[in-house]
Image (cartoon, rainbow, N blue to C red; front, side):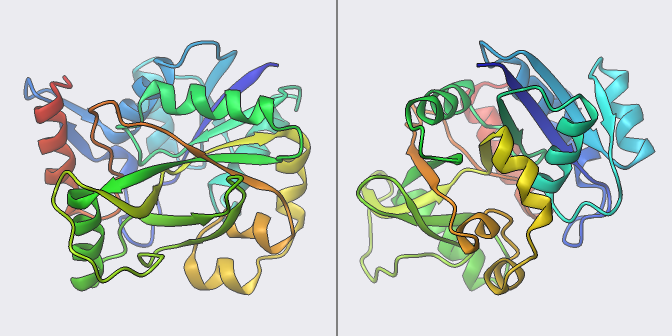
Amino acid sequence: MSVLIVIPARFASHRYPGKPLVPLRGVSGEARSLIRRSWDAAMAVEGVSRVVVATDDARIRAEAEGFGAEVVMTSEACANGTERCAEAHGELGGTYEIVVNLQGDAPLTPAWFISDLVSALRAAPDAEIATPVLRCDGRALAALKGDRAEGRVGGTTAVFDADGRALYFSKEVVPYTANVYAPEAKTPIFHHVGVYAYRAAALAAYPGWPQGPLETLEGLEQLRFLENGRHVLCVGVRARGRQFWELNNPEDVPRLEAMMAEMGIE
């Protein structure tokens, strides 16, 4: 099955304008833009037919083409990354069987997260979209709760049934737990990793569905699938010693840079 990775990126983020162009310094001190690091993460995935950046902004296009990325220009009317992926796939002919949305704010996404995601979707014919979830340890859970306590919109959590079928996603920490966990201890909370693998038909249908109340309240694009009764598969992935975090707020820059230094990422 042919696989396309699309990295949707927009300049006019409400919470962090210009985020794709924010520089992140690796362990050597070299600064690379967020979109460049997301591109690097996508290019590390094996078995992919094509990787493109999808944007509506000339500044992002110039940055991406400057480091050799293929760019697809999309409409400013795209409400979220999924709509941008759908438009980009259509612009490329709509011929890929699986389209992966590697959001441009997740540069620490390991290649095996995406490989595991694509494999799981191929093995689950009833699923229309698959997305990774990572069990939080005590340190990750404390970071999620810390963001909420400070009034910041941080990472997203996922709740799913015994077969991995998604029940809900939230920017709150769900399910609720009052327990205190040691930094390395496993918790019952799963961090939703902002990557999606769509079957082409489901992706093409998505822009035609109206935004529902849950998507509107949470600001989470994947809830549109759930609100339309679609099968979203949550795929458990393993960190293998890697740390993971998205860049959601300016305060996340030093957090990501510290993680990259600790993991030896250039």
